[in-house]
Length: 338
Ligand SMILES: *Cc1c(COP(=O)(O)O)cnc(C)c1O
Image 1 (cartoon, rainbow, N blue to C red):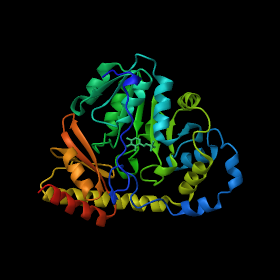
Image 2: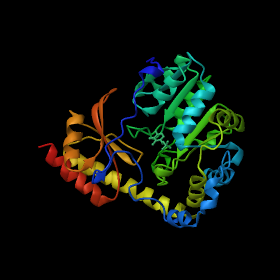
Image 3: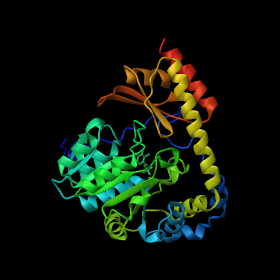
């Protein structure tokens, strides 16, 4: 797939204002408890000055959370910013970026903006095809969006050791399942892990993400990213969550996982076959997904519809939240399928 940036269209946001929004995989239990207090204490005088250029306080808190040295952390305005910066830093026009198909929809956009071409790889041939493509950047997502699929550490290791490329492993949903490949960083100089505060950590509105990699990769990505991408208030709030709310975060993630498994069983008994997921959402293959999405919307429920996904066909991606919300969704789904 090769496109030019002139052909890109705006990200299609799901309509706001639905009674129940299960469309974007954010934390449906809300923001962690320390946020309101930290916001209340944040002084207006601090807002007339620039924030720190590269967020050292936040880096220290993330380093502790991730179990690495702070020289291995790069922050960004969402992990989108880290991903985009990494692709701009390591990709030259005409280079190839290889990724799972289906996977995160923003990656082809960032690649296209940097004049890279993109090749999507089927699940069944992932290791072999990644080895034969000779891409300059490999993007892997685990648990994968939108399928929920978890890649084993062996698979990631095999791909990374065969690769003559920057390997990006997107762990946006790692708090819900799968094993982080953070322990592989010591052995692979070409590995960049990205993560976000937008999902399990409940701070999507603040736009904070980060990467974990060798200090050499970190400085290259920061050089391209530029200063001041994390606002002063975002840095303070995010560091506060890591310092105060990890128990809350773990508890809600556990509840999301339990509800996800219960949700899958309930869908099975309605005759659906959701894909096995390690994330806080399920992908449910269903014919005419757009039509079903629109009927659900009429009942005040937002989900994300996908059409003609590679190897899957049409499907709905549904975020998992508190159980009463999932019950409402299940009732509405049964009705619209009649
Ligand atoms: C949600 C998501 C992100 C996070 O994006 P932010 O810019 O950090 O909000 C990154 N990767 C994947 C696969 C996602 O689903």
